[in-house]
Image (cartoon, rainbow, N blue to C red):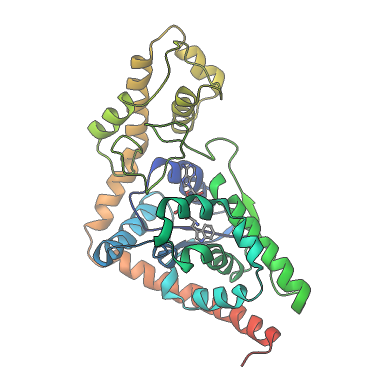
Length: 327
Ligand code: TYM
């Protein structure tokens, strides 16, 4: 029996190469090895304010990008979180099992709530409970994510364990799967900050739909340092981040890359990097354009995905309700 993979992505902002290199690309590559469910988590998106029309469009855009990146609806279930109501329902039930103290330790909440101060919603605080529901509904074994989501997946696992110990064996215990290279791609304008969809600076992230000249401009302006050597070195976050991006798009190893750029300047390296990234994204961008040229295609895939996900989710929800003594 194949193990079950579940992962999700928020339909907010522009999907960038951090999302792609750490998550989406691996989801696509592992499709034959696992049984896969991928979710566009729109209920998570509304934990911060969203413009309704933009949110609706973003849900289709992200879905299209996942398909264009190789997620194959014939081999994987792809659906929108709010189309399967069991996610919100299980989140409530888990709320009544998760201790406040666990949630208060979540670093992402601490970071995000500092930025928004008094605008912070209860939903943002409760975000990890909904994420635990996403994962636990489908008897998930493995959750492939970037490093920033590790703590949330661990909370899902702890929640499963706690529920099982109170009510008896119910949930499978999930494990995070974090890539060895590229688990945390940094912003091009500030390599001390994680590349993020919610960061607004125009030189911050390379988005999957950026045209070649935009990619080139962002890379040429990327922050480096005043040293000259082109070397992988974690103490030099700017060049290290660019080299990591190069490594992941080119598929070459570190030694090959360092020797290729020995004696060259940053400008030469950046030009080559821009070409590698542009070429790496070109097939995805072409497939995306083809896909979106067919009206209704994405919606049909999402409807089919929700119809395939719902029975498994409802089965788990019913089991959980029975254990708790509801209904
Ligand atoms: P989201 O939408 O922020 O990001 C989607 C995926 O991209 C990864 N990621 C990064 N990886 C490397 N470097 C970066 N700079 C970077 N930025 C983002 C994320 O780790 C993630 O894997 N809470 C999740 C969505 C979610 C989910 C789930 C994931 C909801 N339910 C259940 C897994 C399982 C999130 O906001 O991802």
